[in-house]
Length: 123
Image (cartoon, rainbow, N blue to C red; front, top):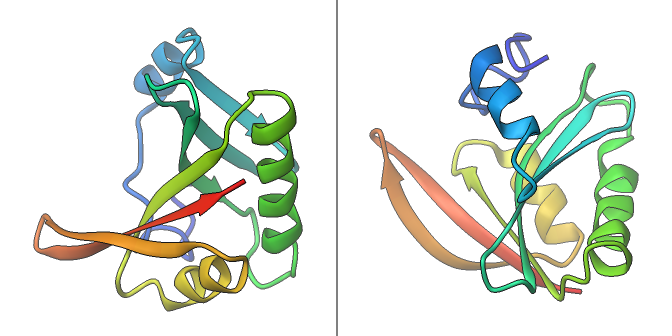
């Protein structure tokens, strides 16, 4: 899914070997809801890095409900009080969704010649 044309500009693809290793890491949680999300548990025990969401076919209106469900899962199942993420500046659709769902910017960084914007949300 990471290599589908609509995802390629916005997702740094991970090879299968790295995915297999990460699946064995108890601090990394993969969720699959017809598509998939990757969550990393921060060492502080209260924050979750919302590492990736890949929707199989974009613009179907399922991204926002999936993110809301992920937030609920992080709060109830993982005991998190904060979710954070980064998104490329030119991924306007994702930035719009995150802002609409209450995520706020807290940092910016240049990554490989592209601007990454960091967002967070208190749960």
